[in-house]
Image 1 (tube, helix red, strand yellow):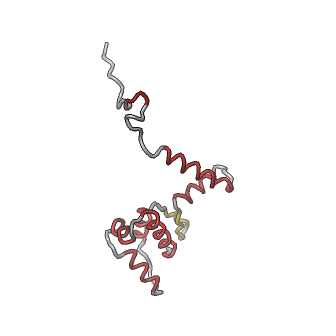
Image 2 (cartoon, one colour):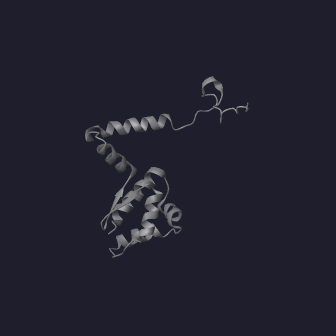
Image 3 (cartoon, one colour):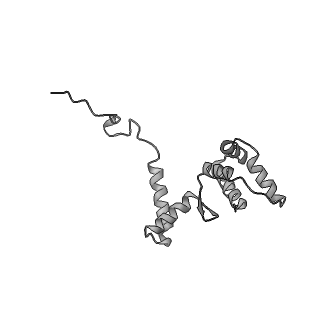
Length: 136
């Protein structure tokens, strides 16, 4: 069974982080502005309903959340949760994970832009290819 409340929580977090409204996200992911609104309305009204798996998958994919199916249970995993799981699997102590995240974010921020011509050593951009070698 799909936990629509959890999906809506992730969508709200996405909206807060990116500014993309639920209507915009719904249109981008499912070609309908009504999908997320209908989920919210049905949940609010206490109606029994089942969210279409393809639409759930499309919306979650659009916000960078992966669905893992284990038997008949769907597990949602954000990129942060996936990284946390991988770090623990590779032996990083759970108490050290916040420092690892800070280091990754710092590295990402430092390398987010490409070198401009003036930033590149010797004031020139790197060559796109090697020079041709003439045949003997």
